[in-house]
Image (cartoon, rainbow, N blue to C red):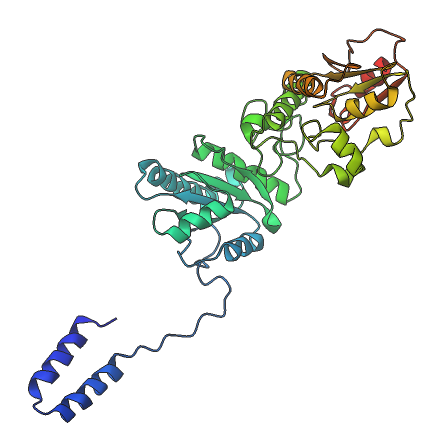
Length: 376
């Protein structure tokens, strides 16, 4: 770039010269004067992020790479990443609240008066409207809204994040930081759940926690547990993001390619932990009961084993799953499978009518496991 005084120097020099050779020499001299030799890049891998002590707000520069940001997060024991836009008043207000929160954490009097206060976090701010690069970086991190935030613990573990499309509050951030600090230090969170928030990293609090708060402890009330499970599995079957359930490749838990094809892709949501039909040894004419039948994968495989002389009953407490399973049965034109809405602790099945009971990663979700086995 040519600064104004340098441009004037060139023009002034040319006006004083009268022959072509002198002009040529003057131009070369001026160009040499204007050449800027760039400084060698910093040896630090994080030179696109200010490296001030934790407890200060750092703005991520537009030439920062997402891997660089993730590396910085991994090196910090507690990190808050916030995506904002300069045109949004609520973003400015949120940053002011975050600065005030950091001031609270740095206040010795406040620290001594509250043993639950987390250590000062590293705060990284991505201003998405400053450049396309920063907007893409925020999206790569999973921050699609403004404002939105993520809180990481030690080792770069994502502890909690704002709900997509939800309202971001400083109280939620404060609670998330406390939970992350407790988890990182190995201290259980308060509450009957006994272990920080009830949501896994990246999960949607509205689906995962009874009150919709990512800072809630895992529920201990049986009804709250059942509701959480229902909401999570409903979110999965309806292809909603953020549920607690994680789908896995059915081949990785024991299903053969033939079984996957036979059951149908809509019947296998990848929510099991094995293939019970590989060792159940059901026979023609038997009645099989599947506890927590989901979209029906194990029921359909069992139906092929018991033939038309047998019967398969699938029980699930999530209405969305029952609807999906019945729809799959209608598509397959399966006649020897029934799907019933009910709880596995109190089965909607008559006594002494079943030859074999199977379950695929569902009994573990029950708040009263002894009752499940008594019912069986």
